[in-house]
Image 1 (cartoon, rainbow, N blue to C red):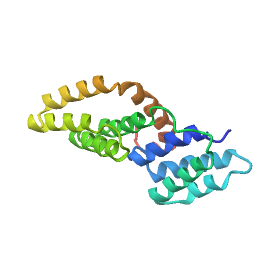
Image 2: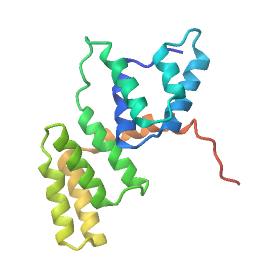
Image 3: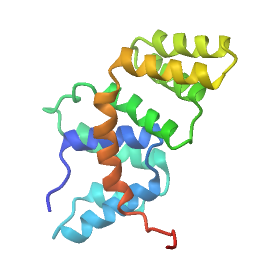
Length: 170
């Protein structure tokens, strides 16, 4: 078993930051890695015992920061938005909340936040109807080429979800 790369940690950070995964997911992921490594690094041990998202995010960022030769992956901001979209798909977020969070995130990083806010305004003006949601979602996904980031986010999410015990009964 190999440790996650700096590139991998960027994606894990954005999954945690977007709320797509939780501290529970990170703890189980870290514990599984620790079990497979002879001498785990201290940052991985830290992640396995930290109970707060803010602590886990800080540890991941510090670990990423220790590799100054590695730039932030191209498209990581789109990946973050895809993580929010997966939360929408899981019905954790309404369409309006997704658009609002996407706008807030893009604004915070100094990127073009007008697009999600534009779609949010259109959706609000249509009184949040199901038809307006469907039309808005289809157009947003098409205009922003988000689909190319949704599947990688879903695939990475599945590695974290495999750590969650199945509590459904047959």
